[in-house]
Image (tube, rainbow, N blue to C red; front, side, top):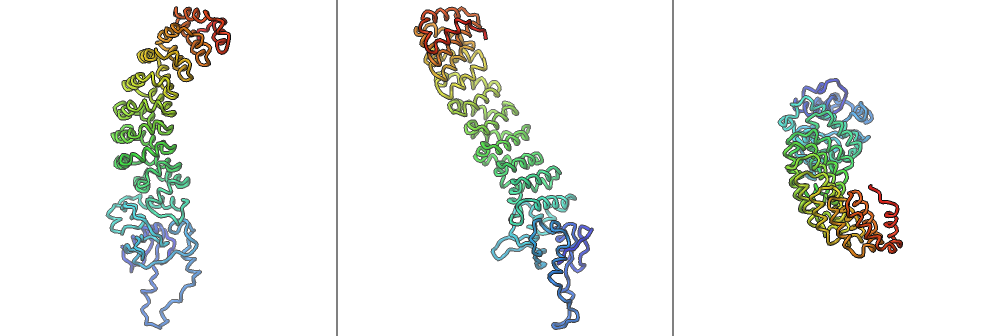
Length: 488
C-alpha cells in the first residue's frame, strides 16, 4: 500500500477493492489518495515464471514514495524517520488483539497499543470501532467531522508528548496539562464545534480533578464548561458530588480554587448549583481555614442568594466559634461576616457575641470580636459591652484584650466601659501599663468626642495621683491631658 497526493478527499481507489475498505482508508488519510498495491493479485503466472513478475523496487525508492509529502502531513505527527510499517489488509477490515491480548486499533500504523475510551465518536476517530460502529454513532452525519478530526489531529501533532503518548482519554488530559497542549485545546474550543467539545469533554472527564488542579489544565476546564451542554454539566456536577472529598482537596489549592469558582459562575442560575453547594458545605471548616478555599465561599456569598447559600450559612453558624479560634480561620470568618446577608449575618453575630468572654481573651478570637464591634451594630455592640463588664480591667492589661476594650469605648456601649474604669481604685496602675495606657487614652478621647460628663470625671480621677503618672507609660497619659485631648 502506497500513499500518494491527490485533490479528492477519497482519491481514486483500485476498483477491485470494496467500498467498505475505501471509506475506512479515506477516514484515516483524509485528503490523501490511497493506492492499493495489486501486484500480488495480478500475478497469475506459474511458479518460476519471470515473464509477469515485476522486479522489486529498491528500498530507497519505496521510502521516497512513502514520504512524498512533508513529515507532518503523513499520519500522526512526530513520526519516526523509519518508513511507516505496512500491515495486511485485515487490519483495516476489523479489530484484533495482539499476542499479549491488548487491543489494537485499525489505524495503529506505528504498532502502538491504544486505550479504549468508551466514547463511540472518539473511539471511531481513534480507530477502535469498525466502520459500521462509526456510521451507527453518527460520526459521518456531521459535515464538519473531518474538519474536526483534522483539528484534533493537528493539535496532537504539535503537543509535547510525541509518539510515546497514548491516544484517547489520558492523551487529551495530558495534553491539557501542558502549556502548548492547553493552548491548542483552547483554540479548538473557540470553534464552538460540538463534536470537538464532546471529544475534549470525554478526554478530560476521567481526569477531571487533575485537570482542574493543574496550572495549564484549569484554563482548559474554564473554557470547556462554557461550551458544555446541560447534560455534560450535569455529569461534571455529579462527579463532583460523588467525590466531595476530592473537591475539597483541590479547592484549597490555587488553581483548583480558580476552577471551582469558574464552575460556580457558570452554574449561577442553574439548579445544579445546589449540588455543588452541598458538596462545599461538607468541607466548610477546611475551606475557611485556607486562603484559596475561602475565596470559593466568598464567591458563593457574592453571586448567590440566601436560599442557595443556606447550607453554607448553616455550616458557618455551627462552626463560627472553632473558626474564630483558628489563626487563619478568624481572618476568613471576618470576611464571611462582612459579605453575609440578613438574617444569617445577625444570627452569626448573635452566636459570636454570646461567647464574648471567651473570645475576648483568645489570641485569635479577639480579632473576630473586634470585627463585630467595628460593624457598629448597636444591638450587638451593647450585647458585647454588657457581657464584658466584669473583665474590662483584666482585658486592659492584655495585648489582645486591650484592643477589644478600645473597640468597646468607640462603640455605643462606651458608658459601660468608662463606668467600670471610674470605679476602679487603682486606675493609675492601668494608665502606667504598656497596654493599659492606650485604653485610658482612648477613653479620654471617646468621652470628649461624645461630650459626656464622664470625660471630666475621668480626668479628675487620674489627676488625683498625678505623681504616679510621671513614670513609665503614664507619661503618655499625662502628656495627653496637659497638651489638650483632641476630638479625633
